[in-house]
Amino acid sequence: MRIANLHGRAVLVSDERALDIGMASGGALPADPAELFTRWSDLIAWAAGQDVASDPAAVAYSPADLGAPSPRPSQVFGIGLNYADHAAEAGLAVPTSPLIFTKFPSAVSGPDIDVTLPGDTVDWEAELVVVIGVGGRHIGEESAVAHVAGYTVGQDLSERTVQWEGGSPQFSAGKSFEGFAPIGPVLVTPDELTDPESLSISTTIWGADGTSTVAQNGRTDQLIFGIAALISRLSAIVELRPGDLIFTGTPPGVGAAMNPKRFLRDGERLVTEIEGIGQIEQRFH
Ligand code: ZN
Image 1 (cartoon, protein in one colour):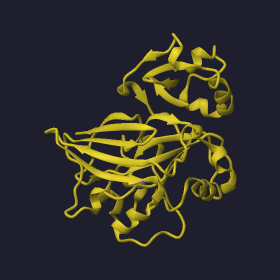
Image 2 (cartoon, rainbow, N blue to C red):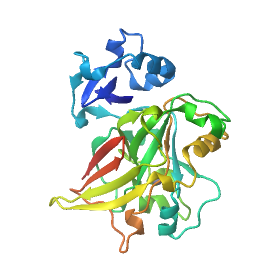
Image 3 (cartoon, rainbow, N blue to C red):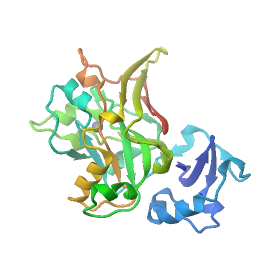
Image 4 (cartoon, protein in one colour):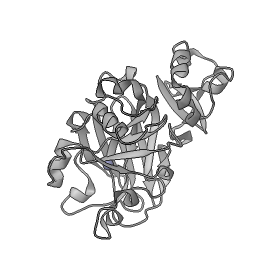
């Protein structure tokens, strides 16, 4: 099942068509995409009986009409250095436990947006994002997947100067500017992916002149701490809540690790894609 946020309303999506969940359920399920996470098991049961492709109430849409599939998460977690090949690129030791930071929730945006560059060292990080369906504390790895609503594509945009200024790392500051946590285009439920830890993940930069560069081209099988381990670790510390986001880390190919370093410029476009989920796009000014 693929779920999206179309003009602020929750929709089921199939073949570029969208069915309004609030209307199609006759008001039995919430129209608000954020509220929907509190009724997740009811949604799954109802959606199993829907056929979006043949439903005359389904409408065509364009990616620019989509908002964040989880638009108001109470918490947004980021995990640093979580790809073995990215840790090697950064010249840093593989972490012995997950490196946890937050992106403040006001940074969350839809998948197809314009972003104002707050500085001249804004970098990209393509990430598989886990969306929590059923919250809880002290979730064991063996039951973690039952707490996942689904997966989406995210960009952990990072202003590197702000991230490192002041003498000690400030990941939460450098990664929380407006539009710095775009997610989408859809939330894909776990049953649709054979293995979320074996997907291709890429970032392509498009220049104003139409040239493109594939900056990142990795696979989620390089995750050091897998999805279940992250849910278990985070929930040992905080209460996970419906709609919360976990940015699971990025593969190699970030601009800060290039020689010379290379950051986003006015007029460039960033396209981030994960196999089986889709792609998101940001334009920088
Ligand atoms: Zn990241």
